[in-house]
Amino acid sequence: MPRTRANLAASQLERSGRLGHVHYAVVGLSFVLTLAVWQYATYQVDTRIEDGFDRSSDQVLNLISERMRRYDEALWSSVAMIQANNGEIDYHRWREFARNLKINTRYPGIHGLGVVMAVPTLDMPELIAREQRDRPDFTVHPELPGPMRWPIVYIEPAEANAKAIGLDIGFENNRLSALMAARDTGLSRITAPIRLVQDNGSTPGFLFFAPYYRAGAALDAEARRQRFAGAIYAPFVVKRMLQGFLDKDQRHIRISISDAGERIYDEHAEVDDSTDPAPMFTREVTLELYGRQ
Image (cartoon, rainbow, N blue to C red; front, side):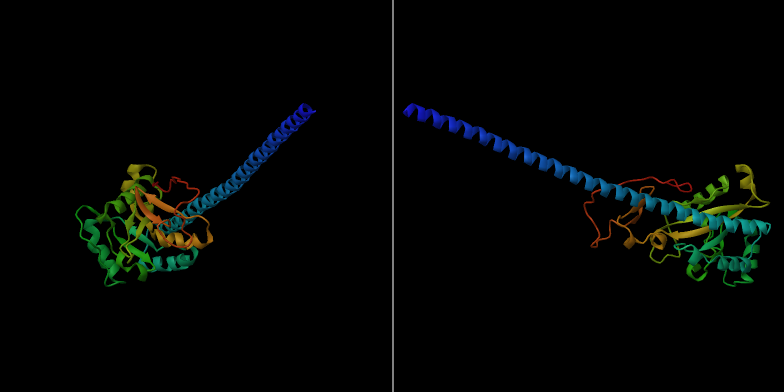
């Protein structure tokens, strides 16, 4: 009997051990399943957030491209107006046209709309005398060498752009290079980053040119150079332009923009409650816009 009781106790202990192993196996399996479900749920949430991030960033890119197209259309409608007048424009007609265009309300973010003329240096006294009949203080500056000058003759609104009136854009390479690119291609072009003379904040900006020619459009680069009469142009302060149609408070993402290695706009540098120093997702996109990346 004692041996029987010992055998019975051993058998019960063995069964108890097997039940313990099953219990631990069940607990372990439950933990693994819980971890798997948690990881899957986390993956699903992260995927939804990433999809939302991609949609938001695509929307921003589309808004920038679409707004630039609208500005481009404003330039080309101005070119069409001048060429419909046999390539001629004067102070009064330009001021009336620009005011009827309602650039401040129809094209938010634009700093102005103006005319750059290609003028032989020998003809500069005649141009200045003509413009001084309507604007006695008109002059062209700075004095530059060479056979051609490229002054900003008209720009509206004039008050906000007074420092640009009469400025010869040949004084600075980024401005002149973009103008020459527009001249030679017959296409609208924007400059590399510049500082606008009329921007008291001296923040990054650019100019947007659309060329026009004597006797209408020219078919090849050499003809364009010979018949180039000037360009319609619009100056932009990047920060003001983006605020005009990309309200930061209406977005869930923050953006920065660079051109030629120069940061010209950066919402990440702003420190506020919405700034995330370690964002979950980032994306870098190169946009080809009017001769610039």
